[in-house]
Length: 218
Image (tube, rainbow, N blue to C red; front, side, top):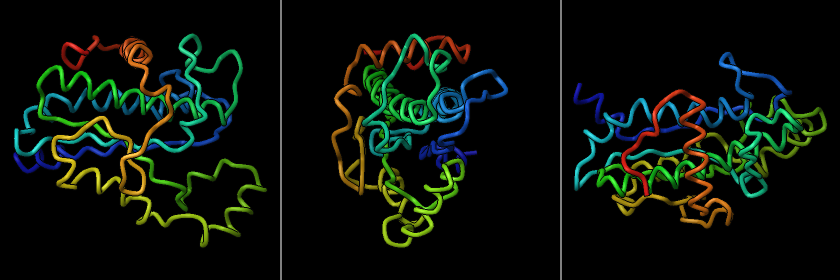
């Protein structure tokens, strides 16, 4: 059991879909928002007590969330998180990635307020040659096929910053960072809006049917 706890101290949250047509998850959520964001939000809740028990003053547990540069053009519509009014696959994907950044920063605020030895950081893996592009148009697929070897990272290269976030000694006890190419980088200005973070948090709790959790909050 202790070995399992140690493994869970480094929790990678990375599953995603991109540019899918308008459709819903089994729970009725718009697929980008439900799979890319809400699933990760809920998974963190399910693991958090164990992570808090695992973290120590000298070795914090770490939550690493994977977003993307797409968050820079994302807009969070708190009145229509499910994109019911006007659906755009690009807009829905970007919104889900912005939500992940907002979530990570708010999580860190709450963990800090609680005095927990758990840190939360968000990673941008870059443009990686994976099957994530399978729902793009044929022209994009052709462009990817022609340029992937030159412009795209391999999956191994794409994972490097997530691994850095999980094990780098210089990040011990450090949370609330946006990391790209192994460096701390500034995310979009909107992501630092603590009121927006808080409102998204409250709505997310309601959507997945849990109390407003993770300690007292900022």
